Structure formats: structure tokens, C-alpha cells
Length: 199
Image (cartoon, rainbow, N blue to C red; front, top):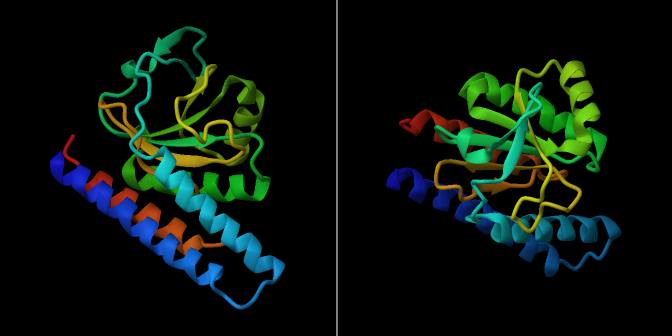
């Protein structure tokens, strides 16, 4: 377990270094085009969100509902082993969401659908069932009514993290719109994590 924890910190550090280098390049670039400004702010957002939302404790007694079940259970009843959580925010851009739903579906086929949860607010109920059917997703959907205790929760974006029995966010990641190579790096590390983890 210590090896996995050290590995997760190393991956987050690597992603932050790459993002910081990109941020530095844009900050000191002579070009001041609008595109560069947008890219600069995206990198800054990715770095800050990764730093602020990694290693954040989650309330294990958070009440959730599992898809097709009207009764509430505590989050800690769902985690017998680490799970990749994809948080779907209905306010995120549709092309971004479609791309990530395709990726999470591909990831679930590699690491096992039982290791992936799609987490969303209860208000997204109708939208998520439609998205699941249209995209032919084989993922367990978890609905929450309350706010998760992470800073980015109310920001209109999708994000990933791993949650295990420690209930601390690990491998937190917001997919990039413009730097898809960072997304691919993250997905490959997630696959490696689940292949190396001994449950």
C-alpha cells in the first residue's frame, strides 16, 4: 500500500511539474494572443485544482443512492476496494462530457467496471440515464444529494479521483480541453495503478 501511495504522489508531482512548465512558458511568452491567455488560464486552473483537491478527506458517512435503488446508504458501504470515481457535472460542456464518457467506458473495460463509479448530483438523474443509454455505458451510477467536501465540487467541470477505504482523494484530475496528452498520461497511470494494486 505504501508503494501505491508513493506512486500516486509521484504521478501527481509529475503532472504538476509538466503543468507548471507549460504555465511558465505561457507566462513568459512574448505572444499575448487571446488563445495563449485562454491556454494559460486552463493550465493555471489544472495546476490549482490538482493541488487543492488532492489528498482531501471525504466524509465516509455521506449518504448516497445507488442507481435504481431508492434507499440511501453510507458511502463507506460502497468501498471494499479502491474505486475510480468520475464526477459528472451536468453544467460542463457537452463535447467535453462526451469525450470523457467515452474514455471512462474504455477505462472500465480495462480495469473492470466494478472498479469505476460515475458520481453525480441527484438533480442530474434524468440526464445521466439518458447519457448512459445513448453512450451504452456499463457503469454503476451513484447519486449524492449533499456537497462533497472538496473545493472544486461546485465548479462546473467533470473530474476524476480514486477513493479507497482511507476516504482521502487520490489521483485527483480535471481533464484538459486543450492538453489531451495530459489526459492520456493520467489514463495510463490509472490503468497502471489498478494493475499494480493488490486488493
